Length: 344
Ligand SMILES: *Cc1c(COP(=O)(O)O)cnc(C)c1O
Image (tube, rainbow, N blue to C red; front, top):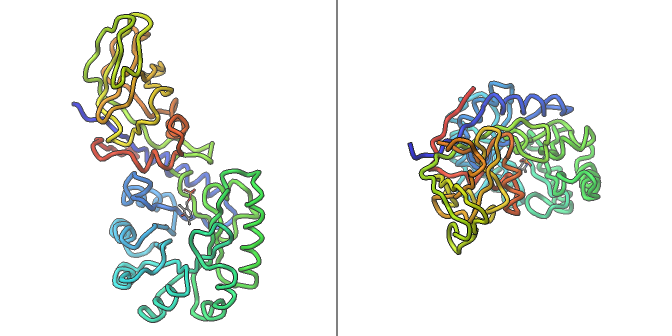
């Protein structure tokens, strides 16, 4: 077998949801955009529904369709990008709730789908998506008159609890929603960890469910095992890989495994990470290439048949640190050549 194995532990996912739910003051929803952070919207959605999640968020209407097919008719599915031109049929047919984020979207929604559920997305300072304070002040009464199911905003810096932006956005969100008798939502994973002031009626964790920072207590959800295709001896002074990126200083044994940057194991992570034979860390040496990675297994007493790149010893966040990115990007980049298996 020359295909790398990506294992997704749905029990760990469910436990992460339950633990975040226990931390949240109100309801805990689940964010499953980008195909469930790359792990399969349907599988992830079903596992979270079984754990107790009643409301789900996706980025765009098409993702909501896939999720609706997996979840059946009863659970709530909301769409962060709101009601885009041409979305009406999908929103209606699959009972999706758009989070309206502009005057244009609001007019479009009331015109094309009168009476259809919607929420409102407010911009409390991130300047990415949602109605700004002045816009909202002008529209607020009209919008509230149509009965939104949720009023939400999003924090820009919640992964850093010391950042003054958190309190600033909290204040702006409070000011914008004062007297609004509609459930309110401000926090994703980071906001849950900031404490109950940030929770309001509903929290929307994503990355913490999948085992990523800033939820440091998360159980790891994915493991990635790579098959060893070949092992060779390298003499001191010989080089390994493109650009002669690594030069042996001692007699070395080098294992070549079947995965590379085409599988989302981005080249920038390069040296500085390990592959694991059980508990034993073996350094990645030379450059990550498209389909192959080379690993120094000199210290092992036996030649390995498999080496693990994502394990509890080396999580998506460790890989992200080595590549100068974030766990979210590692997760959502994991490739489609992997043989995926789900436990739990
Ligand atoms: C992605 C996203 C979330 C989930 O964020 P995490 O950091 O993954 O928990 C919540 N709300 C909005 C608006 C988002 O875009």
